[in-house]
Image (cartoon, rainbow, N blue to C red):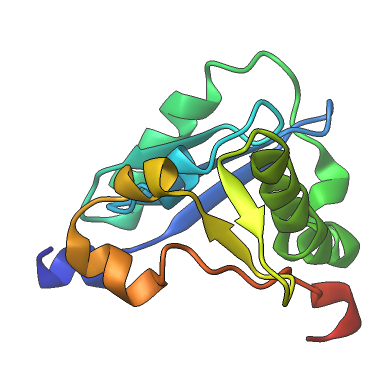
Length: 139
C-alpha cells in the first residue's frame, strides 16, 4: 500500500431511509467482507478524496432509497459508530461467520478469516477480535 493510499484510507457511509447503511472504504476490504443485507459494503479505490467520494456515489447510485437526513445528527453519528456496528457483528454471528468468545469479543471463524487477506493482516487482527462498540456510553 503506497503512502498516498495510507493517507487517504477513508470510510464513506450513507444511511438510507429504510435503515440500511451502505459503506465504502478505500483500499481496505473490511466493510465489503463484513457486509450484511442491512449494511452493504464495498472496497473502493482513488488517491484523492474526490476520487473516493465519486466511487462511493457510484456505489450509492445502486440503491434507489433516499438518504436519511437524521443520520447526520449527533445521535445518528453515534448510532453509526456504535449500534450499527454492533448490529453488523450480531448479524454475522447469526450467519455463523463470526462467534462470540467468553469475554464477549467477536471472533472470526477460519473460513471468514481467510477472506481477509494475507497472513500479516490476520496476525495483527487476531482473527478479527472485535469488542462490541458502546459509543453511546462513551466507551
